[in-house]
Amino acid sequence: MSKRVLAVVLLAILAVSLGVSAVAAQDDIVVTWRTRPDNQAEIDVYTALSESIDARLDGISLQYQAGGTETSGYESTLLTEVAAGTAPDIFWIPGTNVATFAGWNAAEGAFGEAAIANLAELAAADANFSADNFVAAQMAPLTFDPTAMASDASTTLWGLPRDASSFALYVNLDLFEEAGIPTPAELLAEGNWNWETFTETVIAIGELGDDIAGFGLNAWWANWWLFMNAAGGGYFSEDTTQCALNSEENLAAMQFLTELYGSGETVPFGTDSEPPYLAGNVGMFMNGRWATPNALNAEFNWDYAEVPAGPAGQSNWLFWGAYVVNANSVQDPDRAAAVWQVLSELTSVESQSTTAALGASMPSRVGDSAQPAVDAFLASVPGKNNEAFINALGYGVAEAPLWTGPWGEIDAIVSAEVTKVINGETTPEEFQASICDQVNPLLSGGM
Image (cartoon, rainbow, N blue to C red; front, side):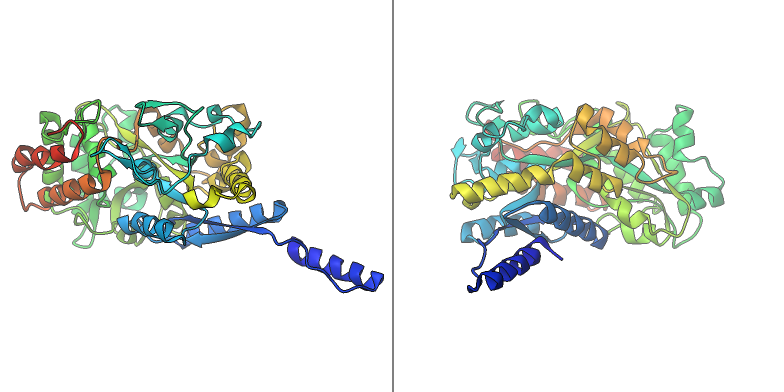
């Protein structure tokens, strides 16, 4: 019996015993929240989490909403709903989108209408809250004040980090055995896991059959940007006011990807690589920890492995997203307090232990108190190389919002051009010669 039904029953019994009509108890504050799950397994995880938090909160009821798939439509839908007054109270957004939702207008160098609330005052009133309890690389952008171009937790808090992840290779060990070649873990142990041996591995597995591919990844910025970082390149100048995509290091990365995909032994770029991997037809599939719930259903022998080193060494990402609060949900003090309480519960060690135990993510909590969540992650998938993800966080680059330009517009332009290069529609050299001419006008200081 739920807490609400139990309360109603007890009130009815009391009313009958007193000979008076039942009076309804004060209604709970209903708090809605949304994530962008990748699959049904994640929907089940967050549904169970919502029910668990709802059961232990008095006077508050939770309603979980599963958002759309990993496309820009998820974010644009949220922005539209906030403007219309129909958005959920709490919602997850990628860390790279914090600036957009905070209303920063790079062209004007000022704030516009914020879709999310600055929670600094609510946090200051909570004696149990400390920004130091979360990964510093995540809290820096969440406490970033673009008017001062600096992080300051005393004045700014755009949300709380939900979790952390990095990339790894999901490896079909059966295909490696069939091809008679060493695994990535074995090559890494030898100090010989690099772009050259990676390419050789992809080709060897792809040659097993026309329906077999050596490698696959999904077409979004982090995948190909990782290879740029591994080559010693990057996307922007250090202050993010200039495009850096035309560097020689980035050219080397684009040439490598063009040759890799030109081998014909990969899943076509732009195609979702997860289904063929889960079907047993892909040797290596690069993705984040969020792909684990589906991988657990694979009917072949598989494991995790670290990504290969490029000319500048190994690189990876510290991926993260934040739970943020609808700006319209903090106008009433009682609702604001309820929403903050739910937000705190969603990012608690207990909640992060629940999600980490299911293998989808690593905790964003740090310190001794967070150890149960870390242990839950390490024990989440017994017998697998879970350390591949943790090791990657040590050399990964933290993704961050762009406060000097419209990230969505820039990403759309660059992703389209990168796709052309990898699919052979244009050359890496042509990309290098023209890409910054398209990006720089969108950056503050880039004209």
